[in-house]
Image (cartoon, rainbow, N blue to C red; front, side, top):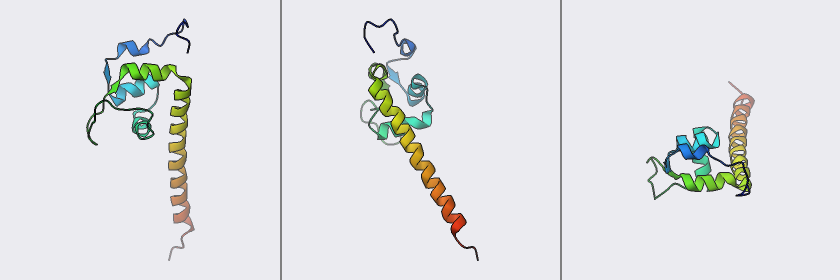
Length: 104
């Protein structure tokens, strides 16, 4: 997006500097269950060095820059689609294995 563009992303102004995964999901328009997979894919980076089960905080400014980048958004969409494609394939394989197994 061009910095001189009249279309600005003003939706992030209502959020605080630190954003939880719920707020990040709201800003991106995706489900909160997709945020951990974006972190694993390296597309979102929590601030500090949180432990495994801690509440993770994300930077509003970094997210605003990333949202303005179309290639980053493409990577986010691709990561989400890839994750669910793999999960659905595993589920179908498990179901096929249960159906194909002879029951005695």
